[in-house]
Length: 280
Length: 298
Image 1 (cartoon, one colour):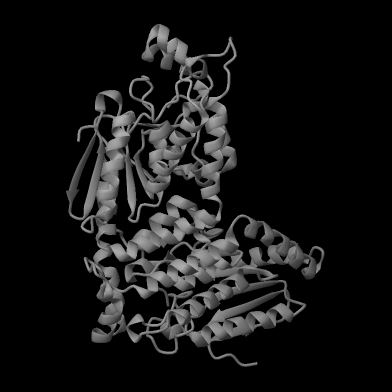
Image 2: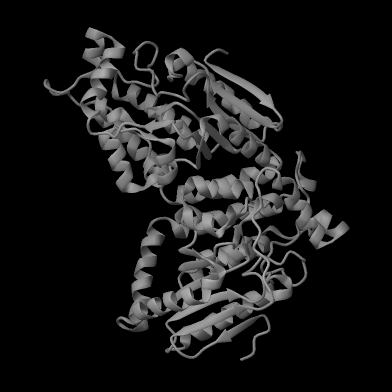
């Protein structure tokens, strides 16, 4: 395993996203490794609680936008895929989020640095999120003409804030994220690891048979509140959005990337918004 | 009518029900639950009262379910060691749930006035009221998971959001009134010496707004509001949390195939008594989750 590291210690399973030079961006390989690892973590009775974290300076900057081996995370406009193929990919992606959300043991996201797009989604599907005060949360997908597709936004931060964050694509820091309910707690960067370990060790005192239903009781309420259906709806909207034809004058991330490279494309994507978003 | 476990004060716009087993920190047993419902029914039919305050006598609001195992078969799941029928456990769970639903949908404004401990079922009761006003040193928490039980209360995510619900229910952590206000669990946390004044003002305001259109119109307004809650999933959530709660109450560490770090509350209670069992349940967690304590008062 290379893009995901796994370590087991004192009843805690540490799952580390490990592409530090790429800000732990998610690509096909990383997801495949997570898909393989997670069922093992779930079934391991010695692991009471799983901690997700990122190697290097960031938790996860989101989807790998290079377009190389990113079939699972990014739908390229040039690809003439049948609707069935696209649907398969979307359903797979949903199953992944729902699986982590419903993993039969508690999960904690330990967030520092960038936590954007699908990286942010990962922190949202974890049961508990503890972040550094200067961590950055956001979902800039709409700036690229892609549809943000995580219904948990609404449940965690409410309709108004969801709209604000998704329409602008602005980032917020850990302190703000705690204030609006996106995460449990923001702590100084230096205390982050201790804080997470303390929480995880405390939870690990309990029996797997106690933790699984306790988690499931809360998740069942979310199911009753419509989360399952919401997942499906956003999924279908995502499919519709992928079929959309871009207007000639609109910012086209993919063609800019082709002409000037990835870094310039991301820069051009974010530049016009800088003056509207508060710098943090 | 005389009640053994609660005190009922009627007369005027504000009725008060006081949980009255102070020597047991108002732990809820069969008798108290029955008396509480009877008292609420009495208030419901009293046309004069618009607001009902629920509070606790002595040092605490309520520490939750009476865990002694005596006279508690209606509020506690049966001891799974006693080979209870699954259906009995399920009926008990549903009956409890219908009580919370009754209180949540109560047609008059209910206010929980909380001081001291407000744990487990005591907190379920307080959360089922429309508003909680507490002292800033009150202690809230649901330690069910530490005994292997899943919470059957579906209001958590509605009240404090998904992340905080999971944090509190997966750790069993206790929080004080100030934090409870910060996360939205309570309406207001106030210093103990100001409590009576604040309650007088707030209940007066509630009574005033309840008086607009008369109490029956308020009741109708509330029931229409309740339909939004049912539409938002509360009805199904009640059923589903009951299912999971019953599932968890069948399971005990000594019956578990896993038995890794599980705490067997029933066994310790049998061997060392109730007090020791509760102490042993919570002690290991104090190192990781500092436990706030209510201030001692005369």
